[in-house]
Amino acid sequence: MVTLAGGVGAAKLLAGLVVAHPPGDQLAVVNTADDTVLHGLHVSPDLDTVVYTLAGAVNPDTGWGLTGETWQAMDALERYGGITWFRLGDRDLATHLYRTHRLGQGAELATITAEIAAAWGLELAVLPVTNDRIETRVTTVDEGEIGFQDYFVRRRHDVAVTDIRVDGSDRARPAPGVTEALASAASIIIAPSNPIVSIGPVLEVPGIRDAVAARRDAVVAVSPIVDGAALKGPADRLMRELGHECSVVGVARLYRDVAATLVIDEADAHLADQVEAAGLTCIVAPTVMDGVESATALARVVLSCAPDKSGAH
Ligand code: FO1
Image (tube, rainbow, N blue to C red; front, side, top):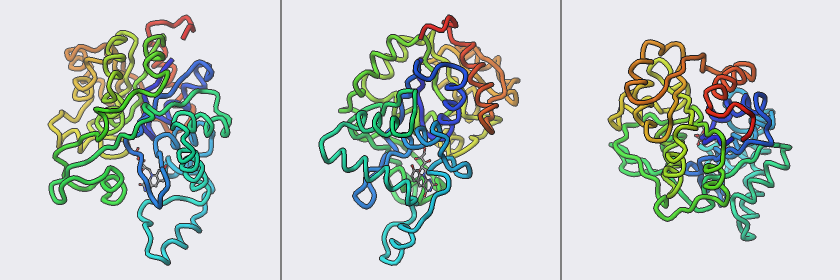
């Protein structure tokens, strides 16, 4: 079983999927277009959010970073007028130090991610979608093109956007094993992540969209839009600004070529017919996850939609 994942929403669903299905039989393929280099350190927010969440170590208040974190390095950095708008906690810094050191030694991001996931005791496999550098670039009305974290964190995604592109996606290659896993997985899940800036870059890596589309019947997506709004982040605003209907119907239209089934929240039950008119089977269920129990319930719904319920994945 393969899950295409962004950050917080995906990590929550994965926390349920590893309860509902053997984790050793699962692979999370994670967006890396949010990655950034700060203080010379390579930060991979979505990979770390998935790993920390599945390790039970994520900060429950933010959904990213580590629980029980301290901020002495950031406080010390402030004295120098260094970059502190992107908050790296003291313990979290160790992950970026390790990753950057290993990249400097010539190790691939996929190898390093496996090392980090193993160190946190994860049984499910976690892979970056690509070992190559891809980077979401955001065109804003006021400032032209800026980097993703500049948009997301520094500007608190509170600026008007006219375009999104994924730099490097034309040259990127899927990380080893990703295309093969998509071809052989009994089911593929598209997590309730931002369809434009989280799942979009994953599908843009050459070969990935085609590999997922080839398995369309086995693909179940979960809508990140509930009652016309994103539960977290700018998915709703971005969808509107980039010309998509901001509803589960808009999500269905974005995914119609790659997914056969869309799980929508009960709040959107009245739109199920329109989702089906877009060409997807629509399943209505509670999709808001406020803990492992609700995430597991949603995971069970998702798994029950997958074509092969025999357990062979
Ligand atoms: N998000 C914030 O809103 N503010 C931060 O200071 C911040 C720091 C940060 C550090 C490490 C990390 O792994 C994630 C961090 N995030 C922060 C979250 C991250 O920017 C976004 O959640 C993702 O890029 C979007 O999926």
